[in-house]
Each structure stands twice: as structure tokens, then as C-alpha cells.
Length: 179
Image (tube, rainbow, N blue to C red; front, side, top):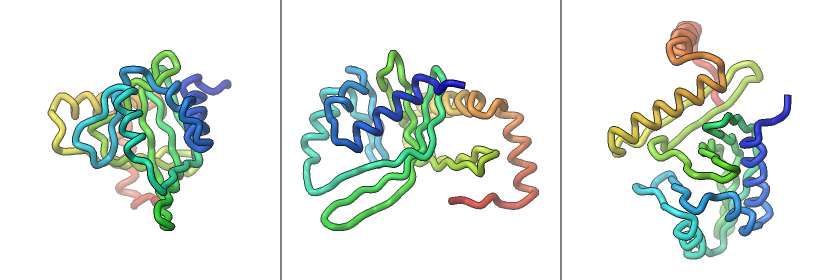
């Protein structure tokens, strides 16, 4: 089965980041992108504003990522990335899940209410742990939860009620190992 085109776009975006190809990164973003970042109370709105933010953040740091996996459908794309940030001779390795809406080959949004998402697989099951920003407006939280549930249903083939039953069964069996 061929890869979904949005998964291919996510791979291309990470390749552009790793190679320092800022033009390709810019081409990957919609002009009206809404870019959410952990720790930022409000998203950056628009490609021009995001480019200005990136120019201000120049310094002795680099961020690279190695793609662990990517899952995509027509509405959502999640790239599981092992990232490395280096600054001032110090290195931080971390895992992240980049959640994107891709329309016409361009990122139009990344999620706002999810402040942390950890996802992993054991080769058979998809495990996801999320943390939400309690300070977002209720409508943003509802939209994020709804969109995330739709994505999980598309990725797993199970509706939220079915996933709840499976989670309860797993809880009775004991904790899953986290990476």
C-alpha cells in the first residue's frame, strides 16, 4: 500500500529542517499557517510571522530530528520524531509528536490544546499519552479532543468507546512499558 501523500509531505518537511533548507521549510507551510508551540500561550499566525520569529531566534543552536514513524490521513498527520537540540555545547535529546493539518500539500495548523503528546508502538499496538493546556478556551479544547479522537479512530480503526474498553482491559492487565 503506498504511503499517504501527507505522510510524504511530513517526511519532506523534516528532511528540509535537517538539511537547513529554509526555503523548502517555507514552501511546506501555508501562508496562513497557525503554529502552536509548547510553552507559548498564543500561536504564531502566518508564515511571515513565523519567519520573523525564526530570524529572531538565531544563535548557537541546532535542532534536528530523526523520523521514527508517521501516520497520516486526509485530515491529520502525526510525525513521531526523535529530536536533538544543541545549544552552547549542551545537547538535549527528546521525543516529540508533531501534529499537523496538511491541505494541498501545506501545513495549515499544528494543534494548540495538546501541550505534550508521547506516542509509541510495540509493533502491534499504538500507545498515546497526552497532556492538555488547561488554559485554552473550552471551544479549542473540544475541537482538539474531537479532532484527535477522529485521528485515533482513523489510525487504529476503533471508535472512542472501543478504545475505552481496550484501555480498561489493559489497565486490568497492568501498565504498558513506556519508552
